[in-house]
Length: 224
Image 1 (cartoon, one colour):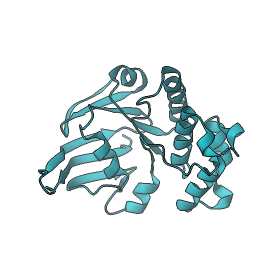
Image 2 (tube, rainbow, N blue to C red):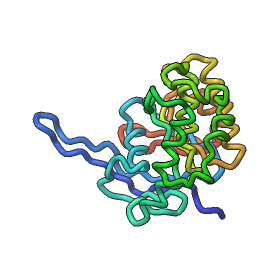
Image 3 (cartoon, rainbow, N blue to C red):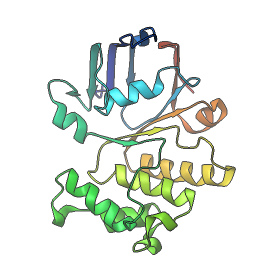
């Protein structure tokens, strides 16, 4: 049996009290596997713990306890390879609006130490249907184009796992369709995709397996 793309065991995240605010347990011992080559949906309402889990995988938040392995690499013991194995597409649109799409991808490639001869900026722009916007200022792109550029940005280092955090929140039906077509194309090329959403119908249509998290607890995990 193939090793899971992501293995999460007994993951706990607790936030200490601050001022008058009480402490909070954002994740309370979550365990599940993401199979290789699948589209895996992680569902739950706002505040359920989905983004905390993703931020732990991305190295942006320190877990309290438990283990996380990405493509077989423990995020604590083998942080570098774990980070190289995952691409994160955040909810927020985060790149310099005065860079062109090509420059955004080149700069991100440099941050990951991708040699110039191995960079895929042109290829990725074609893949996300932005080749004709190569030299436009990013601030001039439509909302849908910016979302697609974020996906390309997450793929500059060719990670085998792509995580999208609420990518269709607040977008129209046509943009949602375009994003899912792109995600399905990437998955068909062998990329394992993890998608967080609160749209159950969307997840059931797109995902091979769905896990549901609420109040920091895993309450369901089954194939669609």
